[in-house]
Image 1: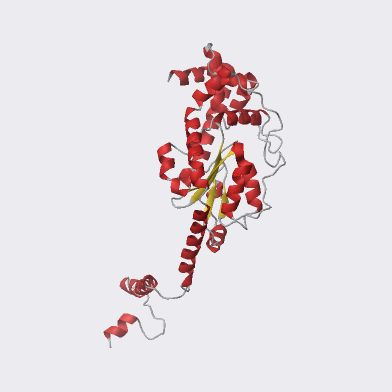
Image 2: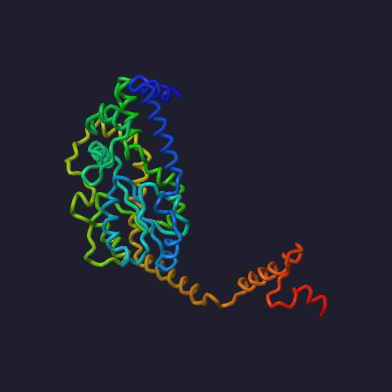
Length: 343
């Protein structure tokens, strides 16, 4: 409560009532966007028909910000039609909760401190040169105070209350810095419960080697490669500055839950990623089930179809006559009920 009050008074002093109104409006819009169904999960009728015709099992590729997801999706998009799985390439807004149980997913993790530096440098240049996303109002305030990632991380333990609160506000304002791994994976228990659905866990610091494993599991051609162009891969064109010991210590406290999750993924990755035979079995089993479903002709009568047809016919006959409406007379010889009554 006290921390929230300090943030409120700080915004009022620095930006006045108009600035406070902009921040409230930004928060409300962000909440609406968060609750809206992600675009990559919306389905039109045309998409539904196309997915029904695709016989491959689905694989959801989650994109955790600043982990190398842009480079991975770049190459997967090029080979989307030849992969053993139907690749669903999502944005930052799709989480574990959006993936149905029984469907598989893949994602990349990155050391939280390295991710922090990369995210700061990415946003300070407004995602340039691959993208051009202007600063939000709260980001503009943060970058007006902190010029580099080390300065921001060091200020988290500043003895001055004002500087420390500014640093905490900046950590909550700057995109990607304010998104922890728990946004995608609520807690360790929820993640472990869905381990059977995890198809692949890649690590950003060894993404080239991990992609070779992933390529074999997906059945991609040997020439498939991650992009070397830094713009296509959305890699920073600026050399990162090293973090001081104080900055690293502060970030380890701030991202304690992220560090624990990344360590868990590193421990589980060898077991998850090595099951290449299991990936083939999954794809084959899915294909077999689909073939069994399609073995029946669409017009072949089944008990459920016959039951539905009879129920519809009875409604068609009985409802108009019970309501005293015009009798059902398809052949012009009186209604069904009249012919039954008169023999």
